Image (cartoon, rainbow, N blue to C red; front, top):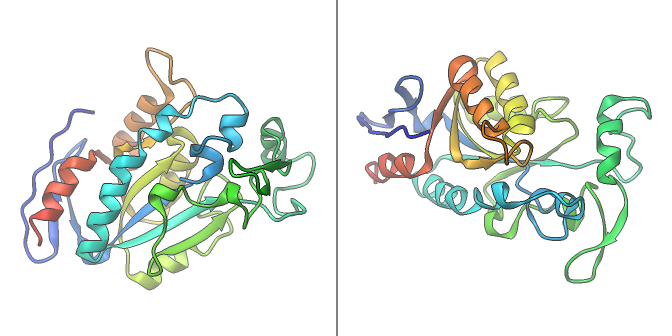
Length: 244
């Protein structure tokens, strides 16, 4: 997406020139949502890497996301991390015949493995190296971190309650993967009347990446047409800098 962003600042309100039209957001009612930027999805030796999936679309989102998180902390915008992770006995992954469990089996969910530094861990199991946030995007003590067990961050989690407690109306969305967990979470957010701005360069999608018309681009299109707005990180950073 080649959209440029500009801002008109009135107090805490910034107007972002996004697709399909500008959107005004109040930074005091905004949170940055980081979806599943964890070792299993974005680190060498994690689940996707072990499955032979190209990590480059996700890895390319790390640096711009880090810059957004730094600016958000400077301007007092709340940050909420979501992590995909199951209990050790997989009791929250769904029954054996559930689509959620079936679709994760080819990725060896629950399998014991060794991390790049030799420590023992398990694929997509909570409180392990696999479900830790990527070190480049490590949470700070004031940030909120929560687990989810389905693609949407709202499914049987406290995400909605946390956002309501923080007084959030607007979500700046980052993470992976674009057409799965990111899009699922944005859909559910829209159903709950949150206004979502997806940062196109702060999300990645390996599925369909080599195709002329990728799943990533398809998700950007459907989000800007139906579920929210699409912008880019560098221009968001510019308008946040104007608030300092």
